[in-house]
Image (tube, rainbow over all chains, first blue to last red; front, side, top):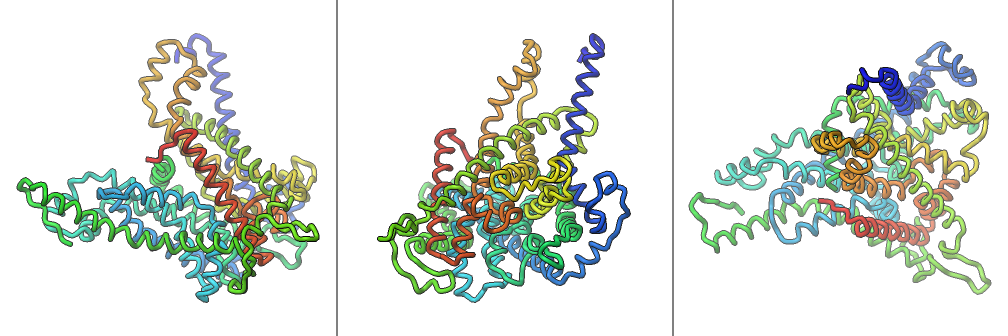
Length: 283
Length: 310
């Protein structure tokens, strides 16, 4: 710390290099997104301009107008919301029952159950794709959002169980002991005592599971033909002809799908970091 | 089902009864999750393994012929090689996936470590950088794939036209794999940085004070203190990132199209066989191979580094 006095040149050189590094990291992290936002506000004719001219070119919201007028994008948004919300609600309900049992009860085979759940969360989705596809076809659920809600449980359930289990373990035991002494059943204890305490954990886990479900591509691409979710719509976004990629509109659609996530992530920053580390570092 | 726990000392037999009741309750609480997992993971996995042994079409799975391991390795009397293990394109996909996994996980770890160390030190603008870190991670994979496909575009992309002077990186799978690695590194370095940062913040500060007193340089402190102490957190992050990279699909499929994705990712190859070419049996065999590869790597990781998950 006394470097500042003993050798000011070296100190300021060090500080300067450090801030240069900070600048490089910030540009690296943010420039691609910034460029996508910029492109979404430019006319298609301006895409060929040099970067400086491109930055200065007049802005337009026509890409956004066209994106929102696009029926397949509208449907995509609707189906994405339905599928992701439903998968998250089912996972949270099942997951909190399981997490309560795994975090609080002692019984034979508990570590076995934990390992099965962990194994499923490292499962390659492709390993169930064919099996699920034939089931989806056989039950007549092809192109039905229910098929996606159901298949998304394969990654949302293990995730919610793991994260919620580590949260349940951290809740002091006295709370439910008191409820048990009063004669409450485990379900009553879970709903009346633990749920209120677990609320922040449920919000965090739900949000992270929502992000995963919102982003899913392989199942959505395979199990639907017209009722597609937004990632599939954005990946297939095409213009008037095969050779005319409407980049401005693609970027506008991308921004529409991303900005709500970024806002959610920034608002719940702290919770997200704790949720991620509970989910990943502890298992 | 209801358990009464009285405040008076519980005799041993009664206590065992309570334990048994608790175990029963735990079973009922776990049952819905176990059923769901059996339905979405267990049964479909069983079906995939089953179909891997048959020649079957995706649209008519009931009309099938038993092949045994023929989907894996089969040579007809005319000498035509039909098993996927005899297909050079599969091995190209394996090679590219391994390259992708090793290089991107390595770069993510190094960059993630640098960013985490920067964010962990005190400076003006730290809160901003911490927030900026979350942006690439929050962007959906398909969106980042499209964003980068645009950046790589040879006639108006910032990278493709600006930095590379109009070179079409994505047109050739040999150069495309490096372009894809760059996308994955950009997107997931922040995740790595977050995990490493969480690990850094749990390190005891007084050890560094002691090291300072002993005159250890920052460099020595990093290699002798920080890195060994971070090992457990780092290993778990590495396992999860490696497994994600091995089953990569989205960015290849979106940026290269179905056919080139099949030569750059194992999952892309399996999906092309199974869905695009409608060969349910062959595709399932490939999926089983991917499943086995990933399971073997998990076991190697867990035993070699003694990763603990709890």
